[in-house]
Length: 391
Length: 184
Image (cartoon, rainbow over all chains, first blue to last red; front, side, top):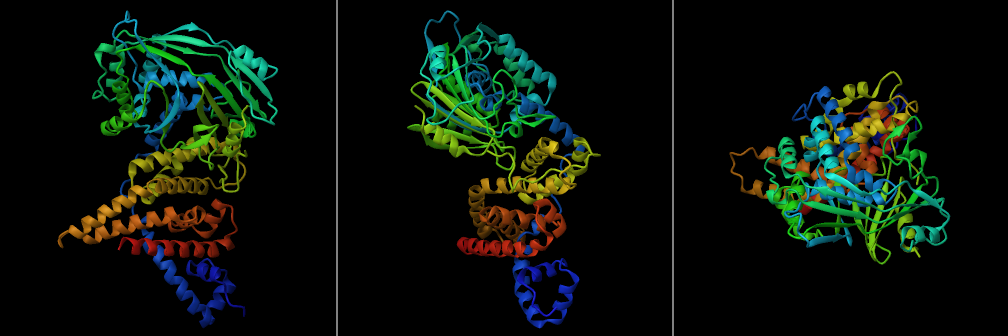
């Protein structure tokens, strides 16, 4: 071989990864050897600086069997985290439910002192705030299946439905959807939807059982978080107006649970509905709770439960108007979020990583309507364009 | 709105190995790789579990190759790099604090340990500032993977690894030196 080796070949030779003919040339070529010396100096700098990558690990960590158990628990937990899953599910009525569940879980069971209290706080969503949370607290809760079941039981036994939303109804156009839902549905210009459906209004009441809720907090390893006894027995009434879902591309049936993150023999939802984009619109739900309910205090407990220190929780609580904010707890490492200007207001774009099966949801609130554009894809720019063309 | 991309690694468990078997086989190496990479055992455990969660979700793609170990290493490396990037600012702060401690330290203290820690943090910052693909390549190589293994994991030809690696090392050195001077 008479031709000199290129830099890449000289670099490969330093790792013993050059083919034999190249190595023979190198042994006999002082020019190539001189160039390789320079390359070796660069390599040595990187090798020194990155030596920690081959150092003995400071800990062996959990045994594989233990980790596998933990994996199963966490995987189960992912399925059980209602807020995040609901946000990515299609009918926006679930945003309302998510809001309620946030009140239940993040606020660690809201409250009221006097059932006879006639003065209520009314909560109406006017903005969206994302709070990154650690799985730790929730893992403690669901790391023990009976305990997780107790939480579900507590929530379901506390809820009394006052109005069932019924099944989604497919309608011909936005005008018909507006008529059925009772508000003006806005759709993006120049796009033809594949389906428009409406879901009826829903309403339910939650009754607080502080003793049970506190027992669960204690069992989940957080006896340091103490619910105020004064909130026992309170009713929190939730009303979720009718909502509209407008689908573009090939999307799952809104009546099915096919928007789940899981997969079956047909592959994951992301692979089955790669071009699906769903615009959902929901007039802000209302939550009525006793006037003396100290939301900030409960919010702080909820935030500490999700992994914040008491200082962090206190600081965050100060920044949020809990009577008008939809708080979305976003599991750390599961997604990223950013604020974006959209539709004349500030929206929140939440994205799952692009190297995973990607998903995004763009959320904003305008004139009393919560809007969400979600997709099992990466083209969030399209969502912003859609949002800006609503009419 | 595609679900796959050129940069998305391909999962490739041999049909004979179930998810649980793959988990038990690769857990230790993936966890340790992440601990070495990011230095925080709790975060490493989180990311290792996330790595296997992604393997589980990609398992329907089985049959596209036969290197689940390489795929796991690549996913873990990307998660580790993302974690490093997200903590870049915090590390900068910590490094500044560390330098302060180093300056105050008495001669009897193991200054060499602090120096090593500082180098480690500088390397993190450099990796975080690098082109992500080159950072990924660098981490895989300096974790001990052969060119063939890297090529399989990144879907590249083995012959391209040398030139790409050298480019990555040059970028790393440039950023590392700039950061080092900045700190001084």
